[in-house]
Length: 333
Image 1 (cartoon, rainbow, N blue to C red):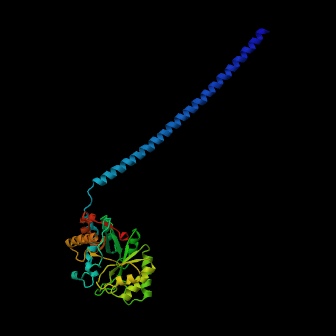
Image 2: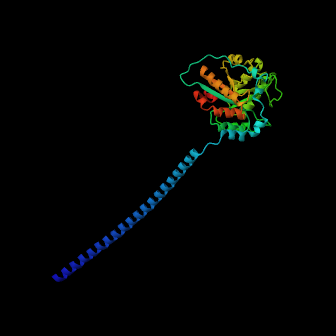
Image 3: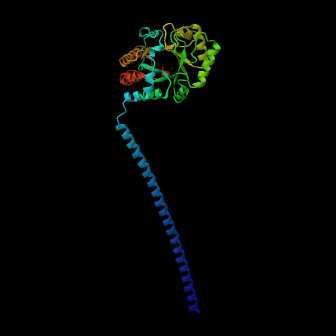
């Protein structure tokens, strides 16, 4: 009997050891599976991360190469660029002298009297480019990479897309046609001195609808209109109702804009220098120097030019000279 009990104990012990062995084997199998899964997952994750890193690195290298190539390329000659984009316009471009009463260089109205001002900052100069009406003109102006304020003519049969072009710009002006003393080639819907308040107000409302972001308007021609106090009263009333500021192009020395704006309690702002009344490049270059001098003397100045090839070329050639002042958009004055 004792021998049988011993045998039974031995068998029981063997079974227990067998179970433990199977349990350990199972645990080892599970751990092996987990480790294998972890390794595969880690490897797969690592592979994905390396792939993403490689792709990102390739993108950065491509971008760097693109940047290096753009820096190494010589910029296209602005002169060639302007000749290209303004070729058609230049053939038909009317001299900027049409803006002035009398059409003569000797008749260019002087700038309004201003006090000399000493400012703690650089003198500011705003340059307005009038008569903007085509995509090629906009491209030419923007190719200069200067903060020039474009003043768009209202849409017409000759220039149907001006409002659409202006819509693409953050800041612009409207160059509103007004009656001149001596000018036969009027723009459509030119404001005239005998227009009643209802007609002028309706026209300004239409301009606001065409150019929703407009905050500034200056006169296209307008030597006769701006010299009429009655007409100017009607215009400033309509502009004020639409929160639009008037900038006097000063196409006549007889302008009533200063008086009318004062009566409305508004500040008078006007052109100081015409850059291209005479469109030869040497003349324009001298006028740019004059505009800088005026800005330095009075703290600020406004110059007006036109999208003619010589004017834009002169501005490009004056880039270094223009660093003597802070060239700004019209809303910075």
